[in-house]
Amino acid sequence: MLPEAIFFDFDGTLVDTEWTIYQAWVRTFERYQQELPIEIYVQCIGSDFQTWSPQTHLEELTGREFDWQAMDAERQIEIESGLREQGPIEGALELLQTLSGQTRLAVVSSSSHRWVDGWLARLGMASFFENVTCRGDAPRIKPAPDLYLASATALDVSPANCSVVEDSLNGVRSAKSAGMRAYAIPNKITKVSDFSEADAVFETLSLFQNALFPE
Image 1 (spheres, rainbow, N blue to C red):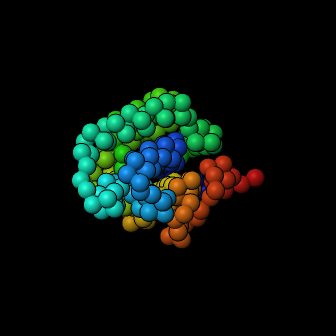
Image 2 (tube, rainbow, N blue to C red; image 1 turned 135 degrees about the vertical axis):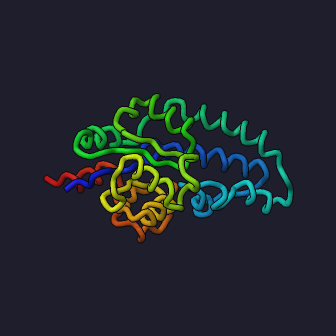
Image 3 (cartoon, rainbow, N blue to C red; image 1 turned 60 degrees about the vertical axis):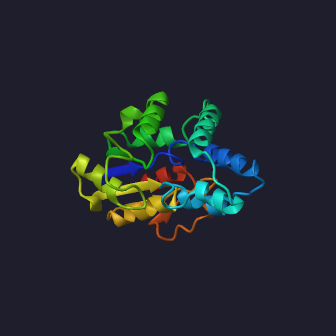
């Protein structure tokens, strides 16, 4: 039986934006002869730099300060250029089409509305979702439960009747703290995480769909 609502994370769950962002950070570190292993960087996936900051980490490694406003703007141009031809993660559209009309769907992201809404519109995915909850719509972002609770309130559904699809440990912890079931689908970056806190882990969205609709 399907839950009353399914909430999807955005970055790394519906669209593979995270690898391009990580690679841009790797190039920033390499410019100063430093490494940025995935095992370290993954700490900020699904959250923000308050959880762990590559900016602070690079300054600690090099013993110097940087003009992050200028560097971030330059890196953002690089990221958006690298993502220009990016489409949905494999299996995402098929899953959303299958779920449409059978349960209520929403997106819950620690990213900004400008970023998430822009991508959903560009990829023709916005119509699948009743609600999009992003940074600024609740006091705290993931791993706090606030964003998921805000989305449940917006849909007028009980958290206990909601399931969440996430790619990050911060996202899973956010969903579980909100009293929801959390399913993890790791990507190239987050596969190094320990998802034992999740209710289940699936390698792909297609396998998650098969679990929802067993033959």
